[in-house]
Image (cartoon, rainbow, N blue to C red; front, side, top):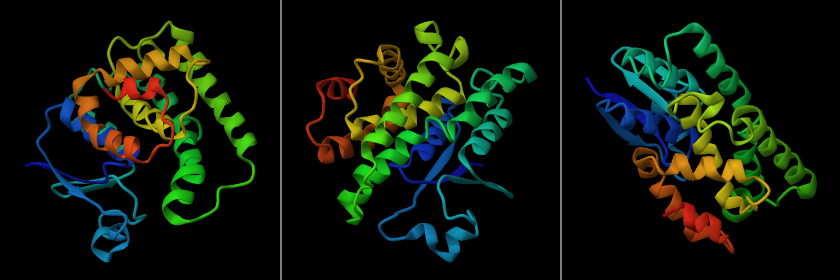
Length: 230
């Protein structure tokens, strides 16, 4: 039986779950929830995801929302040991990042929402505290480099030998930096991490629609981001 994935390709958490399904070669069917048509708020979808958020999955009688819950469930069910080891200590290490992600790496998307997406597509003015918000975002980027990449010592989060669900969640948020056009020169380890993660064919594949969106709407896109999207 195929996993039914309800998602939107521009949603970072959706891409993380989609990437795991592709990497794990898990049979699945995609159901694109169109935000512009408000499909996330329909009674039918609310039965699957009461919050109206994406992604969500249906696996037989199992219905789940919240991306990190879904990632763990799928990794455990399909015994994707490399993506989420069964060892309790290794799980705890990865869970540390996954918990931090919501108030840490996720700030990238929240900043892009407030200063790019809302002004450009909703007509909502950007907040007046841009300098403060971008300074705060720089702190989170530096923390990611120092804590989770060991200032360049680790190829993957916390030094795991292969990419895990933590990396899948992280790269889908980090790719939103492209829309913010932030200079990556002060963050060489982050730049290298993004480059390496996007070189994974399955990860690159699920980002193609996002790359097209970025190239169409981002203004004065830095060459470093153009190169990363190749």
